[in-house]
Image 1 (cartoon, rainbow, N blue to C red):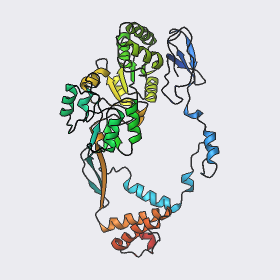
Image 2 (tube, rainbow, N blue to C red):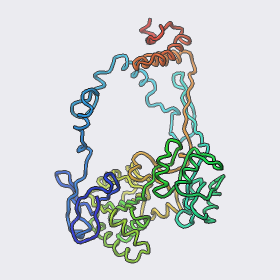
Image 3 (spheres, rainbow, N blue to C red):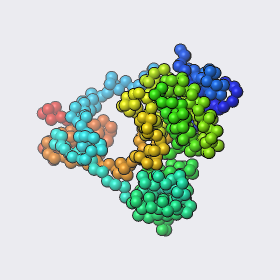
Image 4 (cartoon, rainbow, N blue to C red):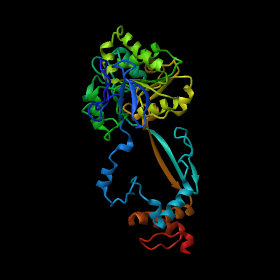
Length: 446
């Protein structure tokens, strides 16, 4: 939903493109008993109150889903939950429970996924993982030297647009690029992914680009790996009375100038700061050289949300899951501990998105469009593949694991799978298991 500057009160309208990037606008001022957010809209000034109803998960068409599924799936009558515990086959529960008790909570390497790998054996079974770098990496990077210069330090770069700026070439070289091609756009992405007579195909594609580049990467995903699906840059400020309106307005417009569809959002518990920031934005747009772009983003995608408590600010911020989130409050560490969905956090008034993008890092490619709910930004770990391996160290472990495996495979109707387990129970456990039959537990067999 969106709105803009004008002389009439805010109105609810559908997000652009149906499921697109429509932005809510105005300063939120609590919520009523019906679960609707009341907002003081920018259009009619900070005192104008309008109502915007937000769709909630409970309002999704659950009845239609149940009607479509019918009773065949065995869905419960209210929430669609399957009564698994009550209906589970005794053999299945016995097999699953035994394995769960034996291996639950034991990570394959027994520690932090990013820590050095120290394989260890549990019950005669060795499970571990190893990290292997991607074979060939292709990166698309701007070559004009104006807006992409800083980003090249953070990726291996193998593509650019137009005549490459000397600083870009130097940054690519310092980043470890083995080949640099003066080739841009979706044709560069396609060439690196599919290969040509002179360019060998790569295993993974990374780097920014326009909408055509993003779509090319989306269509090629699966044939090659990618960093993430990129959208317009997003910036959010979580602020209270410890900072002033000029600082907030400057940080909002500093990212709104990225493009005509760059969301910029202030979430605050201070009405004074909310109203002051909106007024300061209007003042700064009068002197900002990029106001033609920033004003459109602010008009169509700007958002000022007034919350009652820090906990509500946290909830709203995690729900919106913006790319860049600046936290400027008297509880910055609390937000750091409790924020779960974002691209990168910038803590305290001394930090800001521009410094992170151009100087501090640690990266410049971050999740947008709520992707922060399930992924982080581009970092060195993205260029590593994690592969697991296992080894059974004793005959006793081979027989025991085989017993569980045999029964579970047959519950799925896979006799061939079960025989992979049974033959090892016979050979390493010294037991006669009939072909295609479940390998009973040793105490039951005896």
